[in-house]
Length: 331
Image 1 (cartoon, helix red, strand yellow):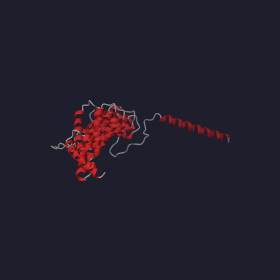
Image 2: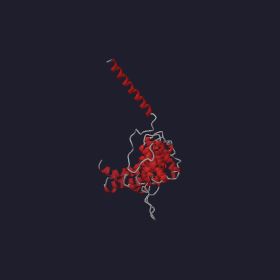
Image 3: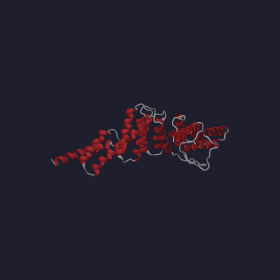
Image 4: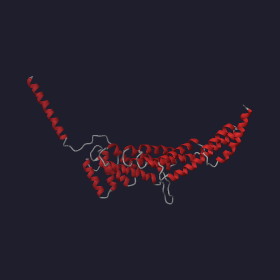
């Protein structure tokens, strides 16, 4: 019985020794993927059996000028060996080649994949700059060009890309500019409400940047344009007036001051006209002389130099007599 127990102990020790040997051998094995794959494809296959050789092969293709082949092999490496040290450099080269070939939306997405999955394993500022360049190009370049047709602008194409850039690195040196360009893209595409929101985010998130003043002007201009689109909207007109006043008080020596002054003159006339229309309604339509008297008095007080002030003063004197006579008859 003792001999059987001894034999069993020897067998167990041999098993432990074998496991240790196998584990030791495992450390000598080439890299083996342990993370999940990004996907699979029937036509994309790596040319080599390990990520080291695959990287060397893809780089050789690139040096030889076979960019199409290099693109496929960099892609194959990043797909089949997602956890290898070579995966991030391969993904970076793949995205750069897409960008070079003009596949800009796809390139942006592949740079974004790099940011989201390989933190610290690539030149971060360079990737951000490349994303910025792509977003700006798509925002400012006309699409649909064909033969003699010049195409059409679509600045809103840059919005989701700039939004990702700001989300990726809100403290990046060009993040204030990216946030400002979101507002500009909305403004250029006529989406003034969204432009106001984006400009305000830039103005208040980056108050000390070179784009704070530009954002304040963009916000003011967008509110002004909204008021022009909606001439009967008192709230839109008042918001534009408030923004103009705030801008002039905050940036009295701004390069945008001449434009802001013109906006102020226009809104001033429109506000005065609206005040006159209100007084006229009480006076001639509603036949409420007391309300008309108050409305005309407010117009003369608030807009002493407007085109309607003279007319208001004439009616004001007549209404005073009317109201006084009415008061005398109804003590």
